[in-house]
Length: 112
Length: 111
Image (cartoon, rainbow over all chains, first blue to last red; front, side):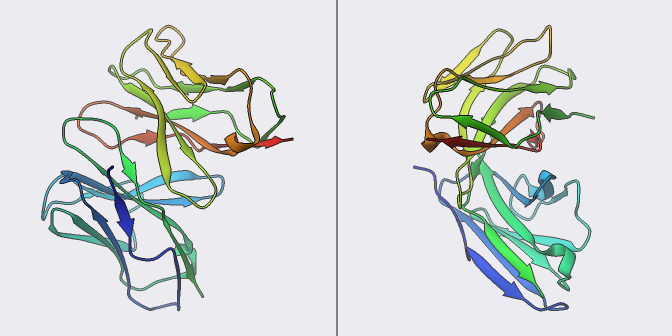
């Protein structure tokens, strides 16, 4: 079974803190994605990566950055957390030859 | 750009009722179409897919048919169960781009 794991299920941070959300997949997938999920807005793509050290902006990259130093790990960074970044964050991975994306369980981040 | 529109929820049904969740997509290119499901407290998981016109995807009693003429991919189930309560997302994909998701439809099934 493909497994996508996220470092925390719940996280509480203060405004202005630097926040790291980690995602690891164990199936050697080329593509990895970060989404945020908010009520009434569905899933919105923040950043994605097609390969190690590569990154592409999604629909809402402002306030976020990413890092992909190893194929299996894709990190989302909030440089200075703000309350409007309180959300559920979902990581996903996908093999290069198929369209099916595999999701992690999500990290619910609260910024106070 | 590419987009997916699905019916807004929440949808509340009694057990054994018939379910339809509508989904339409923009007709750019020849996309593959998907339904994902998110159970409470979990990430999304693939429910079913169809990769070309007139294909029918099916899984766990759910079905959806890729209708090119109406650009639709409606999700149906003949008899829902309480365990089907979840959020359902329609999605499309074409080329080497990320999936584009609809906003999700929350389904609640009551006994």
